Length: 171
Image 1: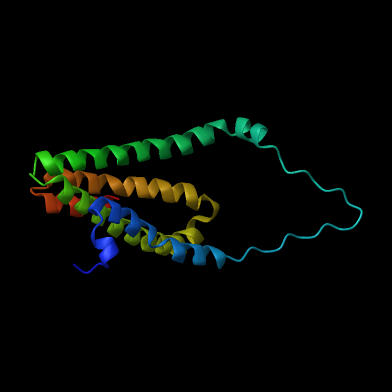
Image 2: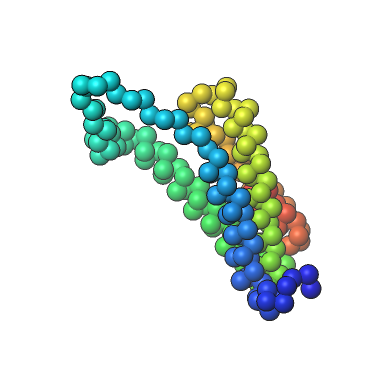
């Protein structure tokens, strides 16, 4: 009822894509404000050092790459599995219509993305000075660890609203 006529005729799932795209202009502006320091100029007469080749570097650090990206892949797979399960549980266990489930999941995802973005800003400001160069890996580890109690909350939900609220915390 509060949408322009052109948008009011769209299905809820199509509107979800538009809502998901709303932050894009702000993100573009934020990226454009990143200051990139100029490269140090080489003294005249010195030969340019070639950039290190990626494949030898990747071979030397294969264990690290496997653990890091393997962990991210496992975490992402688990996250995807939870979303699929929530959609099925919303309909079968709690009797929600597909439209209600889609709207609730979309709303929970928007809340989760916005709060996660703000939380990550605070985490970077607080944790990066304490962890230094290890922050990216330890930050991902802490985020994965923090998802465990939130997932355990799903075991105790008694209605669809609780389930989607927990998902908003998890996402």
